[in-house]
Picture (tube, rainbow, N blue to C red):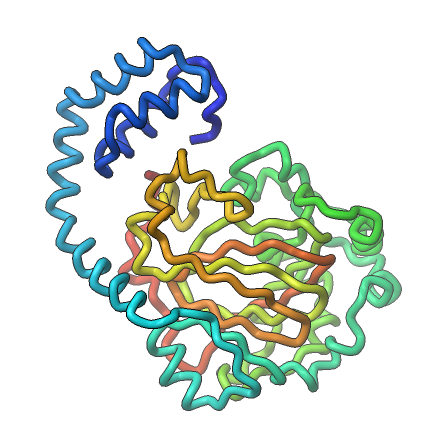
Length: 337
């Protein structure tokens, strides 16, 4: 729901009521949240009562019960995840076979250190280098993100083209902000404009298939950038070159409780989870790590993650693993919940 501050009960409110009733929330608790947000108590009660008697919601509830068997399987995995301390391990120069056996094939995140030591980018890349070597390149950046709660879903609307040198200067002066960010959504143009930068990267042949590293994605922004909770449709490497990022991860088995509202996105804000608005998040297993320069984070397919730039930062992500990484064939598509 875009906003809980409106006095009017609109269709976004009604979707919220329906979703929470279907998920088993106590009706009075929904009224309490609406009243706290400024909705009149009588109106809140009427809307909740109307939803409770709706045949549409009754039909959706019947379908939800049929899908409960799927949730049962996921709950088994959730319980198994809690049998031991689930954490994001760090391993120095993790070997290929162990990585595949213990992490890739089991869908466990891991941080790998020491594998970027030979990358020229680790010594060369900084804001001054970007400006002096590629300042005249025309790049694409997302702007106006602070004005749009759905800035990732609406990323096309936020694209602007500018000189790379001017963008780098903005990062140096910005302080903390999420209003502008160069992300994977800008990759098509930026890969061409900044093609020389890819020579400063080396293939991670221990884990990847040896294709050119320019198959990856380039992220550059000031401290304070936010990538909201979402999951990818492939396994993913995040190679951190400049600055630090805080990453929250949620195992895929928690999918029924993370309020997946559209496609692969979740509206829960990882900076301050609102448990009144998203009560099921209280029971979700959330892992946290800090990704430092020179480290690689393995993000398993389907693993929810939220990323916050703690410093001005640059990340290169890639998906060209040695092993099968195609999981889109049985994905349900562009879901809009």
